[in-house]
Length: 199
Ligand SMILES: [Zn+2]
Image 1 (tube, rainbow, N blue to C red):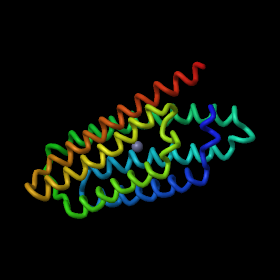
Image 2: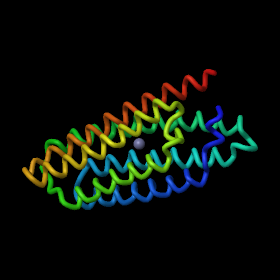
Image 3: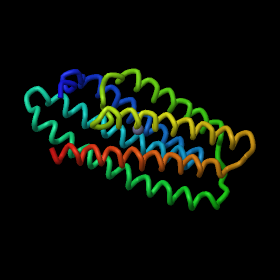
Image 4: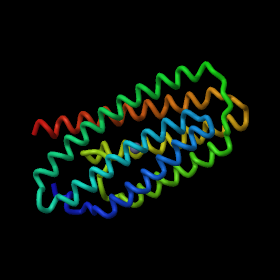
């Protein structure tokens, strides 16, 4: 695979730093605003940060330990996939519980954080356009990026709905959407990494 040569460890490390920082902001913001959708998305971003960190580490090893690093990458991707799917189940259960309880949600700060999330996604996509950092196969990486966008837009829409109509169940619905997308990208990643492991 020639693309490994094009991977830039510094770029990946930079993307990791941004993603990890935003995951932290989103988690704290989610707790502060009372939005489970934000907390859910912060889990997703946290796992993405982990994937970026592993990719950065693996690609800085790549020149000297290429076979070793690609083996680690494949196993790490599989673990990431399991983590994504497990967390998606947790997120969905918690969203279901919260759907029945009406809590106060600070929709304006929620909206602000969700918009920053969308910008972080867009910036990262631009930064890593030529690097299949997320997943093993490019198609999976592409679908994952689409999933990241849809999650962000879902949280933004929920914040707007809560602000305009005080319809708080929108937060739980957005969290369900985040969970669904985590499940799908986890499944695709698991399938791709299992195929790679068999080769
Ligand atoms: Zn993602």
